[in-house]
Image 1 (cartoon, rainbow, N blue to C red):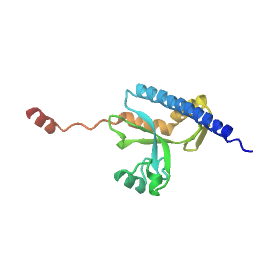
Image 2: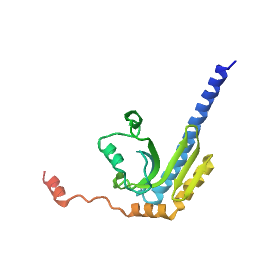
Image 3: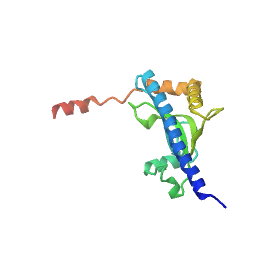
Image 4: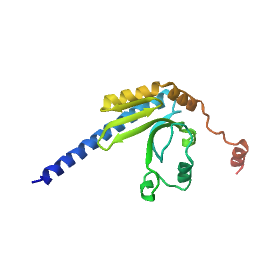
Length: 173
């Protein structure tokens, strides 16, 4: 006879382990984010982000994703609207500019249990089974010359300058 209690206990244990693994993964990303912000004088922030449908590593969205973003459809509600599945990516942007000029660095996949995680960029695929492998995989991503160029480009972006005439009007009012 099937032991449903034992099966439930295994499922509950797996859920607890998954939460621990996801917190560990978040901590690796937080550590990387802090290091990159420090090294770039707060000009580059890296995050994981969901996009609707199939997205390339090129920095141009497909028309469906642009439309969905314009009408406020998020990746979280897409499955309920019969829109394509979401694609997770690691992106970088200059916080002074905002996410208007974000650069896509890598595809990101995470198992519901946390590990394994998968990073994919250009011809590279890394499957990370634990914290150490994830840290090494993200370091390898940052070493990539195409990724380096994208991050370098973000460090050179300047925030839009306020129009001097608008500033004069504020001073007069």
